Amino acid sequence: EVQLVESGGGLVQPGGSLRLSCAASGFIFGTYWMTWVRQAPGKGLEWVANIKEDGSDKYYVDSVKGRFTISRDNAKNSLFLEMNSLRAEDTAMYYCVRDSYRFFDYWGQGSLVTVSS
Amino acid sequence: ETVMTQSPATLSVSPGERATLSCRASQSVSINLAWYQQKPGQAPRLLIYGASTRATGVPARFSGSGSGTEFTLTISSLQSEDFAVYYCQQYNSWPLTFGPGTKVDIK
Image 1 (cartoon, chains in turn blue, yellow):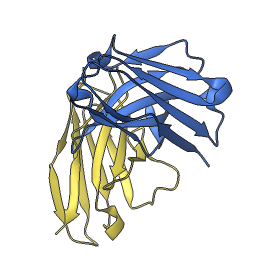
Image 2: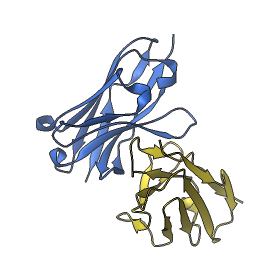
Image 3: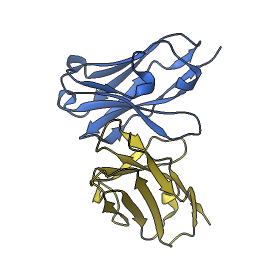
């Protein structure tokens, strides 16, 4: 059974940093692209970033470029999102998602990030 | 950027009735279109990819159609568990983009 479990969310002040982690199991992690998708409270879904199987290619939505970094550790079946210079508009539930040719077939339950003073 | 729009924003349907949801892309996405279902407090669930292919375990009452810029998700006979928000997503070009969603609620 595919499982994706996020951790690392919480309350952070504007301008602060946070690192999200995602522990994957139930599939061969190193053979899939992986993605972060976020959802602001009461709003729709927004693709944030994704990373190739071996970590050699990464893509970001414009609003997080230069502030967020996606990475992975295939030996530990883990995906990460390093978030710096956080803004109020980054407040959202962040989902770790398995990427199947750019659509998303398995989702974690999410990790809530709140940016507020 | 390919902008996705969905209509209607809310669809009120009685159980057992048919529901038809629309999704439009600002430019052609070929058949690189997926549909997701999200219930309150839950993560989204993949329903359809490739515009018309049902994901594993998705009931046959869900069907997708369309290509280019116009797409439709049809739920042939609504069950109580189908009342949710439905999102379309294009994966033809970067950035990957979602529609704003259609909420299907009980009439």
